[in-house]
Image: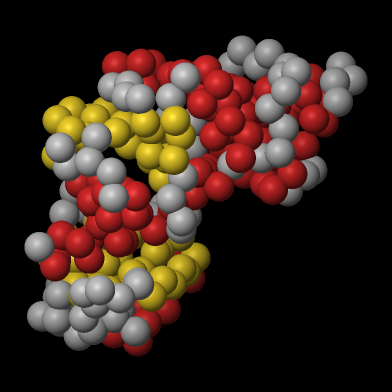
Amino acid sequence: MFAGIDLGSRSVKIALMEKDRPPRLQKYDTMEFYRAHGKKVSGKFMLDVAGTGLPGAGAGITATGYGRHSVKVRGARVIPEIKAHMLGAIHLTSLADFTLLDLGGQDSKVALVRGGRMVDFMTNDKCAASTGRYLENMAAALNISLVELSRHYRSPVELASTCAIFGESELIGKVVEGYSIPALAAGVNHSIFKRILPMLNRLISKTIVFTGGVAYSEALRLIIAEKTGAQVVVPENPEYAGAIGCCVEAMR
């Protein structure tokens, strides 16, 4: 049994894998998970996750994610986030040549994969304006669900702000001006695309594998395919790519 844990900013994802068997997947709210399983040990915040179904220490736990530098997982080996997501994408799609686009809760990553190896990558963890947190804030400002937000991509309202905080103020201003919810939602989705486009342009391929929680957005998938001309592949359970990649690394 191999266990992978992705310490995301919004949720903790866990994958349990055995060779030639589908993974068992679990997800927890990050703060609730830390409260339930974390404690200070010798001045460091330590997670003891045996109660979640992971094997005990020494049984193949591999960790990655947004919190991997500040949170220690007892008995776990830690690998870089971009590597974990690449390995997970390869495992989920069986592709060897593609551009990986991973949009998480608070960061975005793009990697160029050739022959099953990462040859270049870019990350943006300084701004939340191209992440799931931005989409959550915009959906709340529009008083709609994330599912509803992800349906709209046609006739977008132009949103000029490149900051998540100022973007919310701009969106509220557009509401006051009388723009429709579908047009505003489409504008939000197009604004996400505009922020990730420079990274995609530098590391573009004929195929883009889209992972992370934001990959559930049908609107964003369609925008990316239309604007880049690439085939956009969203694997099953895209938000678990990092946790699955941790298991793949352990099995190797």
